[in-house]
Image (tube, rainbow, N blue to C red):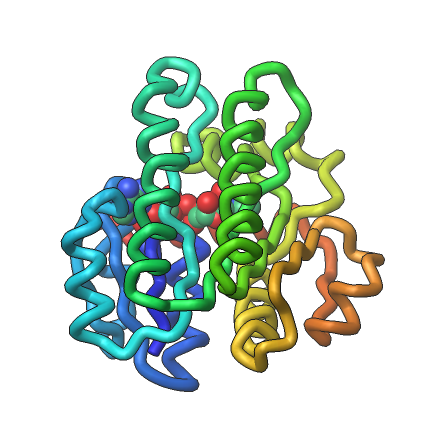
Length: 245
Ligand SMILES: NC(=O)c1ccc[n+]([C@@H]2O[C@H](COP(=O)([O-])OP(=O)(O)OC[C@H]3O[C@@H](n4cnc5c(N)ncnc54)[C@H](O)[C@@H]3O)[C@@H](O)[C@H]2O)c1
């Protein structure tokens, strides 16, 4: 069984839909930016905080979870600048809580959805958090005999701007970004990477989906993306509009 933390969000909910074709899925999400209605009815949904170690322990005790996919993060640049304490707590602290419980409950497989952000001074805080989380994952997998995969892809800061109401400005801001993918392709890459993780072929592996020519991504995951900025933005826009209650 797969546990998807942050599975009520934009990328996570698409991955959940694909995973449900293969087997049971538990979604754990605090609905801070996600939507209950975006979670397929076939999934078991549990509302809760990533930092709640007791709740996570209950989940690992109740369900035979053998792998976790981690999407539960806060990602707004402006919010992070205004309230860095919350961002460190939610992103770094939340991930540490998850890893601690996984280690204690002997759940060995974890995949992290991580982001590469457009280079600007403002994004350093968020990019630094992403790097720290990736390093935590790598250190845990190496020290505690776990398997970890990081999937990096371009953070569409544009997507967040778009849901606040100006998709046109966003499109022009992001057209230089060749790494964005349509969300279905990104979701497929997560499923391929999970299959590799479950086959036990990886101890720790990082894939950069933005580098579409990367041989290890294509060969090991048998996955290749078409670049399409507009589709990704459109996907995000439609997802947020359709998921509103
Ligand atoms: N959307 C993109 O373009 C993109 C690109 C690269 C990487 N990513 C990464 O993928 C992940 C998900 O991104 P998204 O666009 O789907 O964002 P999103 O905001 O739609 O999804 C995040 C989900 O996590 C949940 N969440 C947040 N904090 C939580 C907590 N403390 N406890 C429980 N649940 C919590 C939210 O409610 C939401 O459902 C992020 O880590 C992001 O950096 C996204």
